[in-house]
Every structure is written in structure tokens, then in C-alpha cells.
Image 1 (cartoon, helix red, strand yellow):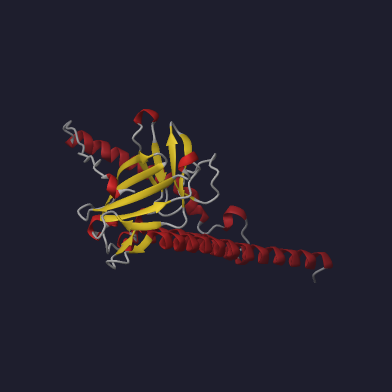
Image 2 (tube, rainbow, N blue to C red):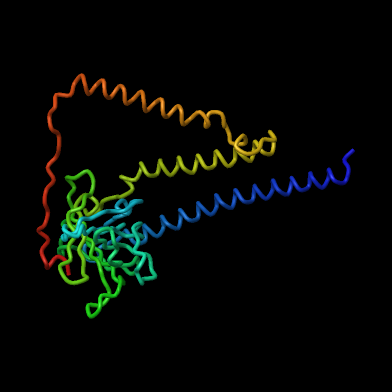
Length: 288
């Protein structure tokens, strides 16, 4: 028979287990909600249809995780611009007085000079009026104050070039004080381009992340409840995961040895590289 203390102990363990179940479900639900909201916001600000021609532009694929780095014209000051096109940029400006999420920031010598625009009320237009095939541009305002000029603003231009497999940066300029132009070129700037066609890789990665999270969470719950395992031992196939780093290390060492053998066998000492085109021909009438 169970005494009073044993019953209390069992009840406490039951409450603890239920609390863990609730916490895990809440964490998974919160992560899924955050991912859904982020995806929804990206689509909201990344897709536009030209009211005149009816052509649709989709820049979702350009709103990638770590964003874009665009070199500025002040090379002596190591000027660079960071942007995520249509969503919040990862390189934020600590001294910025703007409260909204920054879509682009300006840095010089690794010091942030200001937020160039915020993710709100984008102004879309064609780079060349009445010519959707040339590309699309979106203007973001609401950046840090720039004195008599007003708030900073950044114009992101994406020229259409269906001949490229992916979109690339072209230039970052400041044609007028605190008015910036970040130019890109590639298939994302072409009307009718479907960003989802290039997103299957990310879909697979996201599926793997959520699948692995569910595998670990449900496995821990099962092992805790039915196998009376605790701590690291409750992780499903814990023995394999303990050995996994060593397996990866051995695989890397094996690959390195094989790569060096092939290099010594076939490498002839030639120089390999690529030519990068220089695009600095954005006309003033195409910007503001």
C-alpha cells in the first residue's frame, strides 16, 4: 500500500510531467506562430502588382536570412550598406532614434551612421515608366533625421536580367544627401517571376528544422513518461547523438585527405577566377 508521502510524491511528479508537456506544446506553438507571422510580413511587403500594366513583381526570395551587403562609394571609409530588401535588416544601428524595424542601415569603418529607412508604407514603381520589363523599385522612408533634408530614405532598385541564375548586387550610392540608392540585377526584378520557384531549398530546410524539433520534443516526452529516463538520457537515440560529433569529425578528416590526394594528382598550378561586370550606369531620372 502507498503511504501519504508516496501519494504526494506521485502527484507532484504527475503535475511536473503535465507542466513539461504544456511547456513543450507552448514553445512549439510560439515558434510556429512567429515563423508564420514573419513569413506573412515578408510576403506583404515583397509582392507588388503594377496597376497600369497588371504585371506582378515578387521580391520574396531576396528577403533572405542574413540580408545583403552592398559596398558604398566611400571606399576610404569602408562604407557599406546592409539591407534585407523588404523586411527587417540583421545589422541594426544601436544609436538610431528610429523606433520601427530598419530595412537598411549605413556603416562606415564598422560604425553605424544611421538607419536609412523603416519597414512601413513602401512606395512601389517601375524603374522606367511604362516599361515593366526593365525592373522594379521600392522606396522606403522614415529613416533617421538628416537635418534640413528631413528623414533618410532608401530606394531599392532591382533590374530585370533573366539571364542570371540569381540576383546580385550592383552598387550603393548617395545621389542626394541622405537619399540612397541600392541597385541589384537579376531574375527577381523581372515581371511574373515566381519567388517560390527558387524557394524549395528553404522549404526543405524549414521542414527539417521543425521535423527535428518535433522528433526531439516528442521523444523526450515519451522516454520521460514511459521509460522513466531523465536528463540527456531522455533524448531519443541519445547514444547516437553523443557519438555524432566524432562521426562528423572522422567524415571531415576523410574528405580532407581525399581532397588533398586529388589536388596533388590533378592540380596543375593554374589560376582560376571570374570576371565581375561593373554596373554604374544608373541614370538620375531612374532614381528620384
